[in-house]
Length: 508
Image 1: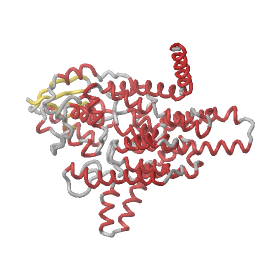
Image 2: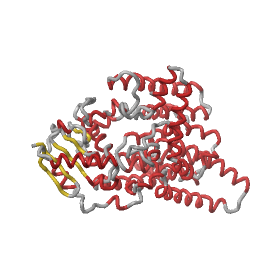
Image 3: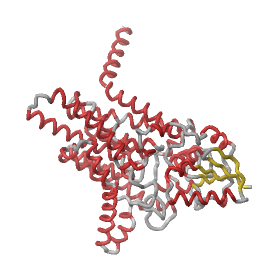
Image 4: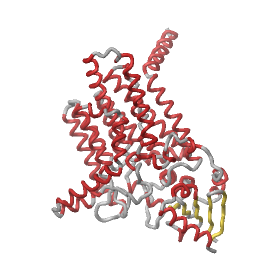
């Protein structure tokens, strides 16, 4: 009898594996490829600037019991994710970091979490357009270049949006309320703007003709959380009067929630409209390629999804209402691609409904070649447009932000990664350090870390890398180089370490 039970379990496991083979292949391939790519970029100093250092530094502080670090002396802890973005998810991640204090682990975790998004969209594809087309969902979610930009350069907790939103949409479609609310809650604790994406999930529930109480419940909970966070919690944590959403006093990312609200209070409707129109216009005109290729990457399928295209409107508006920084080196032409990966699940869902309508139309025409060649043509189109976007879209300006540029994963003669890390280990965690943004990701084991040129007056060490600056040579970079060169040539510091493009100065 026991043998029979074991055989029965084995058969069931075999059946489960067979039924999930397609999304499993997508998940494994994506996790493996992008884990290797992100780790190599990190090890070869091609990871994006600042964020890796800032976020790993935050996890390090949380793992040491510093749940809330905030000061006004220009230290990296001044960019506390709790005070700036209210990213509650960092607390459990901080405890994980305490057990596994390795950057590579978090890069693998990030790739894995995106990879498992293949499963809900495989199931959604299967339900909407049949098992034959089940591969389309994973193909659309994982091959979208926006997902690459969110994952390839740094560890970003906001990338978790992709996974949580994908599963929330799937459980909404399947009417599994417990899991729907669970993943909606997980979406909420990712970042301050999360209530807007839960709103799009609620709209999807409304379109599915749920009982209205679930739509109302999600909307009330999400907007209560969002308004409480924006108007009370963040200003309280930052100890500021008035409204500060995210960022700092100099950079307000959503002017509609600052100057726009003041215009409404003063009954200045024209200025309020101007805030919205000018922000959207600047983003669309500067990022026209993004808009064009976003639709092209999905073969214009959202245009055929009828009412389900509505679920994409709010996430897109979030992108277009974010303040535009043409003078900022990081918010350049790839701004929309870098900060819009959270809209991809909504677009993929709308695309699947669009594909369902297109297939229905093709069946009515009764084309003879449809059953044999249509899926193949579709796959080729997706692969081709993905390649085109990645190479010729908004992110083409900098080759280092191109996933197909294999040079990003190789060491160069002026990069001495291992010896630099050995030098950094000699710096005590209690020492104040001022670090250039590019090198910040390798200083996550220090309590007191400032982004150069902040903290110079109180820093014992200054760590600077020209590997990054030599590639871009922006006006801001040249100014920072001049500041560093003046410090290096002064008698105040000695050269503690220098090799290739990396230099560490120590206070005499």
